Length: 237
Image 1 (cartoon, rainbow, N blue to C red):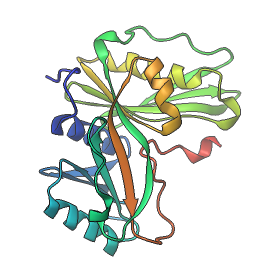
Image 2 (tube, helix red, strand yellow; image 1 turned 180 degrees about the horizontal axis):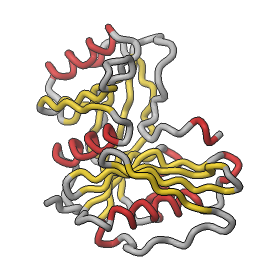
Image 3 (cartoon, rainbow, N blue to C red; image 1 turned 180 degrees about the vertical axis):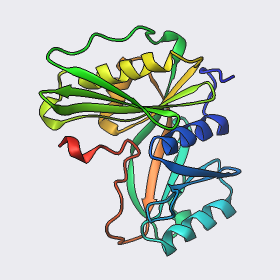
Image 4 (cartoon, rainbow, N blue to C red; image 1 turned 120 degrees about the vertical axis):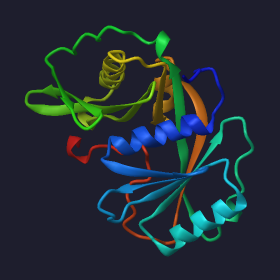
């Protein structure tokens, strides 16, 4: 069992990695503090995630990114820790340092489904150990989110609202609806990766920043996949 008041730990990082990979249909491989996530078919777009890494792990991970322009390196560190020395990453470019890994105590989150927004319908689809929730208006998906259960943890992912429907509370609705679905199982902890602009929203919903996240890639590499771990669904516009 995970105590939500615990500080950032290898267990929580691993739970997030497993849930985040699952909602994308990716495979996660764990070697100590090094986690590698990528498509099951081996195509480009893999990522190495480090927490409490050794110098050897950092060197190996940095070298793998340097040699593979489509590969990314993500460094996770507690919010109260000294930022990592990125010079140890060689020639890699810093792509993003705006994301935060956030946590919530599921005992404090609503069990009941939130009220469906006016003029909208909701579609819930179940896949291989994860759930997709879509908010539909006039036949168009205007908001969406994903959630995977890993052990006693609910990992939320890709919560996104179409640009034409923002500031209408749809992101809040999707978050609460996914947590209500998670409560159908025995869950204790919620985890999600928030973009910089999403941190305030989630704090208002009872989430706490747990870790700072830095994403690095090969210097000058083109056609990188989106650096955000809360990667949006392009079809929402």
